[in-house]
Length: 393
Image (cartoon, rainbow, N blue to C red; front, side, top):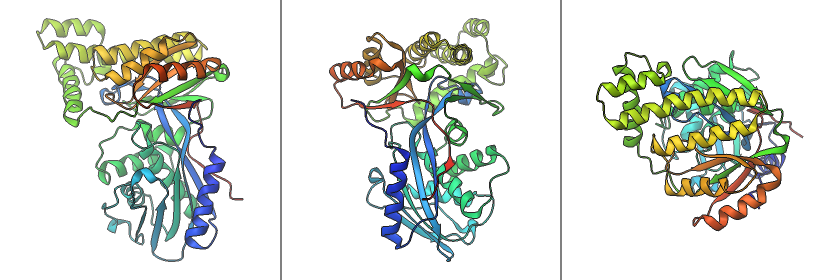
């Protein structure tokens, strides 16, 4: 069977019980924010293209309360983060907050430092069902949950959702030292049950895309449990190749490039690898546009076909797949009722995502287990809610 995603209410109860045990009183604030999976639109973000992420039912929950001091004490129950499961620091002046150890706390500290006003001292407990290191954006879930908690703590929200998104991204850039894109924070803030989010990475416009026919289908996310092998230098090589191609074509970005432009690029005798990288991005941007049209028409077969084409392009042109990911994708595609399967995320490790009929889930899982030599983990998901305040019972 697939991994059972813990019910949000169960995680909330765990957070409240831990808070009471640690602080000898009851929490009066509780919030959550989800992880995400990108359904299509890979390596398009830094080329000003489109991405199509979906909020997951796996969430990070924060329960807490003001403590009438100038400090905050935060405890994490996530064992994957190591033995240093708590942190305490001054919050009276946000300018004084600096990154340090433990590393997981830097995501929280950054959100405090870039929050729109000073906050009072508080105690909090963090509990999460978003797997760490799987490429499902546990970091954005933590950032957005933290920011949502701070809004609830002072009883005031950011003027625009985009302000919240950008503050969380800034926290990851400057406190966690991870130069992430903007997609993860956007979907964690703006996710909507039954919808996926089209994000234009050129102007940050968004559109909620309904999946009204989803009831007969699910997305099966398979974690290869193979660590990401795409080094920062390889990532930069691909990004720089895209930038150089746009420059040679006198375009601001590959968003403005067409297939006929690629023929022009070939006539300049550029390296074949530049042609391949460019071709992936140009076709992937178009696939994402076509995927939205397919969803709006309720055409899940077409959507699945585009997922397959996306993976093949990532494998052959962008060259960011791996033996593990290809094995998972191939095994899933062998089962009738699987409409499409692809790697998701940067590649060379992490997860695949497949669109399939509900009634073949167990068959797919059994087949993948038989074909895949590693220890894969399975998650069943449909489009879930974004960040929200939870009731306090």
